[in-house]
Amino acid sequence: MEVKVPKEIRDYQESIYFGLSARQFVFSLLAIAVAVITYFSLRSVLGTETVSWLCVLMAAPFAAIGFFRYNGMPFERLVVVWIRSAVLIPSQLKYKSENLFEQAVKHKKGNDKHNAIS
Image 1 (tube, one colour):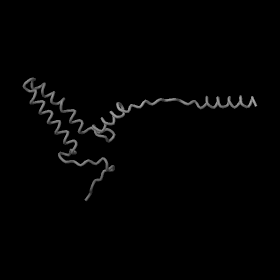
Image 2: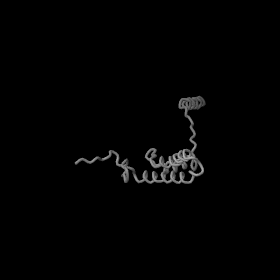
Image 3: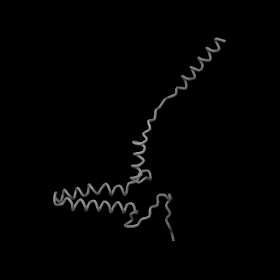
């Protein structure tokens, strides 16, 4: 009997239905619900083709959020980190170069003047 063990245990995700993780499954259901609600609420107002495109456009973000991971973070964690770093605590890094040669020359001139006075 052979059992596959992932190299990185943190990458393991338990699948619950159709090979999807719980998070992916919930967001897929949410995308389906949004598409169905969009279809039944707009089919009498707009044409069938237009409503079908709207269903796809309305459901796509919810489906994408379920599968999205960036640097191991899910979408909502990424949004929180981005808001914290860009909006709440924006840090401005200032670069100040140090010219070591210039400092050494100033230090040498200062020592030469001090020795000349003595």
